[in-house]
Image (cartoon, rainbow, N blue to C red; front, side):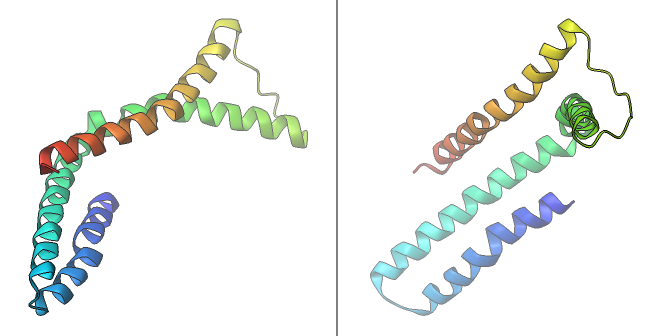
Length: 129
């Protein structure tokens, strides 16, 4: 549950302190800023609920690690064995699987930024900004 702790810290900690500071001042410009921060906190709370709902189900939370981590572990073991000559005799995957191994790992790291951008875009649509 470290993800929920991190999200709650990011959504309520720093922005909450700014909100408290600005709420004490009575300027009209500050009141607009306070309302914007409240809207941002609401949007982040909604985004936190979506992420926790998505990652709360074990199937969606484990699908990527179950696919990617074995390939990363294999590549790491082959690399360490090759560099330091440990004589582990870890075999390279056969011809069609070795390309699949690199493709899966590269696709994970290439698609992750697009996923984050899409989530940010969706959260801006939800918040109405």
